[in-house]
Each structure stands twice: as structure tokens, then as C-alpha cells.
Image (cartoon, rainbow, N blue to C red; front, side):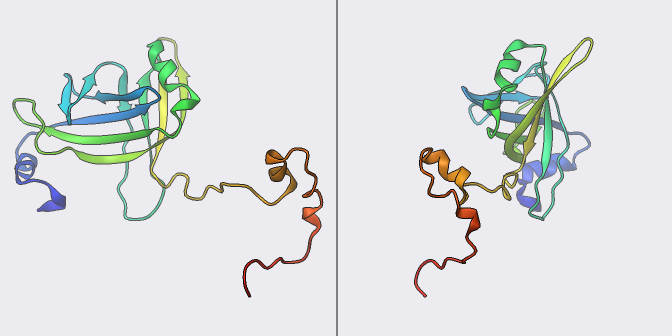
Length: 185
């Protein structure tokens, strides 16, 4: 079986024509929104993926075997003020996005299980304004986006004073040239 695809889906892909749709789930502060590029609503996993003008496009993603950060951008209409208040806000950062690819049969039902094409978190957004339109671009990165980010506190006065604003005990910490050994020898 090629890449875990069902026999039904394999025969669909071998046929002369296919109906392929993209399903996108975007987590927000108030729940999850579901969009599709189909001309009609698509139901998958008890969720209705809405066919509407709010979802405009998604950039291609590239599959690879390396542990690198992959990105894509999702374009949404900024003409709807509800989209601006939902997606053009800092609370959307680090929310999960899943992009599925699904094939439909002649009755417009999903064949088998949709394939996850990309899964990541929103790392940024931008709004572009043109004469007759406006677009929100959500920047989505794979789970390795924060892999090299340094978190936590440092052993310097600035980090220490965040927790203890009146304590001056770390004031000269940068002057120590002795390597302190911790734990047992």
C-alpha cells in the first residue's frame, strides 16, 4: 500500500479525474474555525468545513525528511471585520493549524480519511490593504519553529530583579571569574 493510502483512494488517484479539496482547521481563542476551498461545505470528523469567501488561499508546503522548520501562509479576507478581530490579534500566535488534503467521490463525500499535509502553529500575521480588497496573511510554521529559542531566566542582575526588584545581591554577578562547581565531585 503506497504511503498508507486505502485501496479505494488508490483507485481514485489512478482514475482519469479526481476531485481534490483542501480542509483547514484554525484554532482561535474562542474555538476552532474550519474552512475549505470547495464550492460547498464539507463535513469531516463531525466538523463542517465552510465554503466561503473568507478563506482565500494557502501556499504550498514542501515535504522533506530533515528536521527543519517548514512554513506556509494562509490568506484570509480582511474585508470582514470579524476576521480582523479574530485573526489580526496577538492572541492568535501559537494557535494550532492543520491542513488536510481530501478526495471526493461522485456524490461529493470524502473518500477514506483526509491526509494531513501540514500541521503547525501560527507564528505571525500581517494585513495588506489594496484599493478594492484587504487580506490577512497568517504565517504558520511547523512544530520546530521554537526549537532553538532560549527560554527561562539568566543568572544576571536583570533577570534576578524581575522576581526580586529590591534585592541587589546579583549586582556584581558579572564580575565573578571563578567557575562555580555544582553538585558532587
